[in-house]
Image (tube, rainbow, N blue to C red; front, side):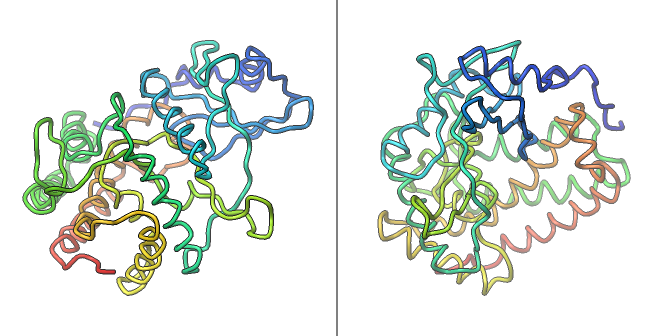
Length: 344
């Protein structure tokens, strides 16, 4: 079955510049007309210049993805981090709340913060990031999420696999090869790195699960010059915050060959362990977590395909060549999961 055509009546089609400005005005923030769309596919995010010259960021949540309770839990976590002096950009409390509604959309408003992607080949930068991740996790460990989901084998591996097959998204000439590789990868994860408990939640034996950033890739860390007030890293976008092992917030900051990743990991943990112990057994989870993200990402693209912005920005998705590449990546991950984990 081919991918569905984009839906011109998708809810975001009604989110025009005027609708964004009207939403801001509904909570007493009056824009001067200048809007800039920021890089986000899951939600719609805009930088707006207000009449007084200040700038804010308005985030319009994808309808149907999170419940209000789940969004508010994200906001509460962000505010806890700010209260602990962790450099997290948190939604503003306006008119008594952080979550607002206008024209069928749930939205929040945050202060604008500039910055660039951190230099991850600089070990001093990585050590600094490690300290801040430890501070995030110290706050995250203080209490559990009650509404937001956990990062688990079912939700990030088995369910996306089953959905892709049920929707007949994968071309027939690649379906068997992809399913064989996917099943092998998931079997390795279930039998090796994790013990599976009730509800499909997985974890290391005796390891602690905590509230995480959840999607701590370099694009969600902004760096400002250290000679400026408040310089250094600050974190954005808790949209994927969930419960999981601490290493989930570290592994996406690693790249390159094994030696390079080992050096990067050592620098991260040098900073992290200044403020919080790290269970080195969790290092065995890095490749399983990378594998789950790979499987989940394909299903995420397919589920969002009727949003017109997705075919425009991911024109290569869904072809036989795409799925052939996914088969190759899964085989690489199967090999990686059978190698010795990184050591630092």
